[in-house]
Image (cartoon, rainbow, N blue to C red; front, side, top):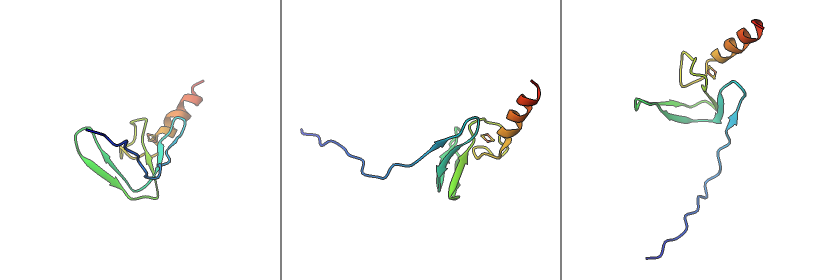
Length: 75
Ligand code: FES
């Protein structure tokens, strides 16, 4: 049996990693959470929380900024 090489011709999705901040990706985005819940954002650019401090997880609510600011103030 001969197998054809699979080629993905879809356009690559650009994802931006921000230092100490969210992952930015073009929307709309559908995210499956660890419990199986699926949430959707239809924003033009979606900010996914990577710090786990957001009150609206998995979306970034800028809570990561408070931590960074407090870290600098204690030095
Ligand atoms: S990355 Fe912004 S609140 Fe977590």
